[in-house]
Amino acid sequence: MVERAAGLAVFDASAVREALTYEAAIPVVRDAMIALSGGRVRQLLRSFIGLGEGRTFAIMPAALGEREAFGAKLVSVFHDGYGRKAHEGVVVLFDGETGAPVCFADAGEVTAIRTAAASAVATDALARKDAGVLAVLGIGRQAEAHIRAISLVRDIKEVRVWGRDPARTAAFATRIGAAAGDVPTICAGADIICTVTAATDPVLEGAWVYAGAHVNVVGSSGPGQAEIDTDLVARSRFIVDHREHVLAHGGEFLRAKAVGAVDDSHIAAEIGEVLAGKSPGRTTPDQITVYKSLGHAAQDLAAVAWLDRGADR
Image (cartoon, rainbow, N blue to C red; front, side, top):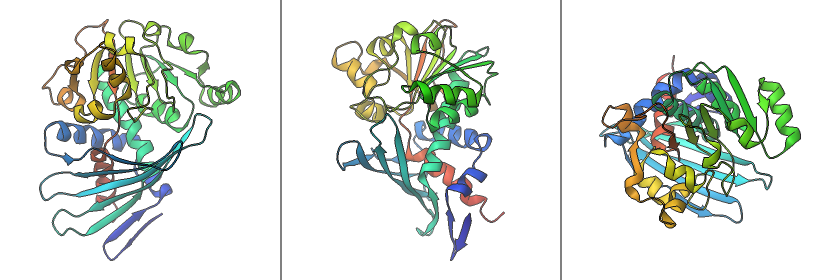
């Protein structure tokens, strides 16, 4: 439910789910990424506090512009030991004119929706227009979210999925009407591939990705994690959500750089630069494009600002 008292709106998880549809979130995230690459958003590198094996507390602050809303996401990321992780926390929005807090929103729900929306934005910019086969590595919450969001920007005719647990994968595939298989099989001929796992080491190899495919790399969010191998990083046109963050926390890129397969110039562009027409996205039909997504407070705050504007409607 949404509550507003003394000018402060509070969106619990159900209220976020009800209001923040993928149709609404996609243009909000698109505008946020253009603003971030254009220098209109101010944000710091996320700060992490380790709380033990597989347990992290993160702080992600940002300001959406001069005298505009600002705030932060405060979130815990806990792995359950079985390849799954949960985001719990709050997004806090402050008024840019008064400095007063105006909105709190459930961070887990905001993260789930805006992350898939960001991948949809990147897919719309980078995938071939005729892309119709979607392969998803991972069977958690983000897997279903990505299928739903990406189906809004491409005419998806076939969905394929992979997960570590065969029984859970089969159940997930049946529920959403997808085909299940091992990673090489589901990626064979796939036009769009999304990695949304909690893997520490690569689950997707470049040899399994076909010419002309687009890959969204989403699940790994720290320098010690990598969902795709160095070969795929090196072979691709590598687009990122934010250069500074990927150079610090993009595990796949950092591993490839450490072995001399790429240098910093391999980052072709930020997605916001592509969206603004300042850098090209896909340059040939048979090119492999990779979008490295870390997720940013700019996306969270833009989404919560959109929720806050509609709170009194």
